[in-house]
Length: 225
Ligand SMILES: Nc1ncnc2c1ncn2[C@@H]1O[C@H](COP(=O)(O)OP(=O)(O)OP(=O)(O)O)[C@@H](O)[C@H]1O
Ligand SMILES: [Mg+2]
Image (cartoon, protein in one colour):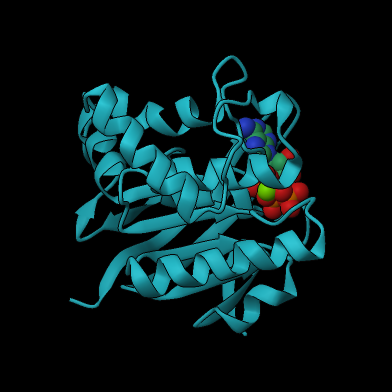
């Protein structure tokens, strides 16, 4: 089957003390294998909410997400964690590197948490850092890295488990044009060489040229443009 991920009639309501916020309103989406989807839309429209729901990190108020035909939210939390681990890599809008750990330790972390021995985890982390063009900064703490380097370490960490689906939330935010271009090239090679399906939320026009489909999120739904 050509679909790796399917989003069926998703609704998301945030209930705050004063009001109910209707963010997603019957959203449908299909991600095909080995394709890149780009999602754009104004600030506050629900792009991160959508991506977190797709990644099994935020339960929708209604609707279901199917990852390789398995429902993400109808299973219990351990099984959902297993599915996330097996299928999903996540590059968060705010990179969330662990500040007390070095670049390479941050990349090793998902492997160590999966019980991979430290020697193999280190080797794999080195390989991922090299793919992400981080050389010679492996033992720096996040506070000792530039914005672009932190972004690339976060991407290295998100791909260390060889995910089939990579979700990236504003991965080129706050970067200068040259480093933005590096990240665009990196996504293209992850897609072409590692056969990853990628969903990117971004306003970066440069990503449109590598995307198979571009969608705009507005009024709680996605529209293909
Ligand atoms: N946990 C929450 N509780 C209540 N409201 C929330 C919560 N998370 C997000 N929201 C609200 O939902 C809306 C969508 O948020 P979201 O982070 O998905 O937007 P976004 O499209 O990613 O925006 P940006 O482009 O600024 O990152 C916003 O108005 C936000 O304030
Ligand atoms: Mg966001």
